[in-house]
Length: 307
Image 1 (spheres, helix red, strand yellow):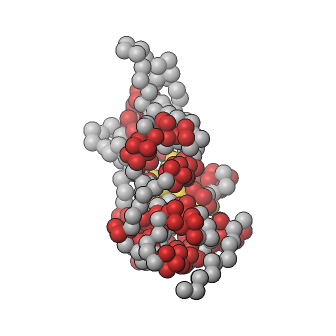
Image 2: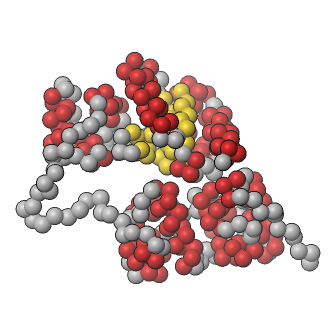
Image 3: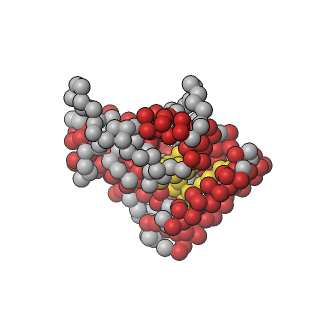
């Protein structure tokens, strides 16, 4: 049987989506079966981690190439597990906990626990620092010295937006920005923000955000929802590798003068930090979410060409 030629190698960051899928299909034809990550590493012209990063895991890459992941024998080697852990850590900017890892990876943290004995040991094997607990424990009766004493650096309109528009509770705002619950409560009382009993602890996903998320996932774009940037701004979606921010602007809130001023301030900060900001009004998303995501894809291609 004639051997199929490998596709010509190109720089990792500039692999087009179709190129990656064509190479995965080629390896499948060579092997006569659905390739595992280890087999693709041996036969392919790029690493399997490149596809896993682009398609949100190896299963996502197989699905996008027309394979049925359920029929694949996905037995991960140590190197596969550790590379995926490093990828998630690089994407989030910190060592993830086991629960956080499960939320963003197609692999399961249980595979790491079985292979390495503990999550901490897995992180150390990947050359990462142990994850920092989001809720540190203190001895009984001990109160941290800075609890409730740090100043809330957000503006009044930012707090009103998080509390009234995104539906965050006072406790959620306090946790997100590293201050005590009492600090947020006092700030709101001093500025006349009415306290309500029922609030979400996480931002509510709006209909237009759901439309964009679904289309981004369908197109295979890797992104993170509701990401906090520098502890100051929450963005609807961010593509970490390309430093690209996607904002879905609801018709009511983003038509208010104070919100428009806030959006300009937010965009200026993000641009100064090297992010490209793409804003999509509600009407455009509802009319054609596919066209909106095509703008994102085109912007990504332009960004990679410039690098």
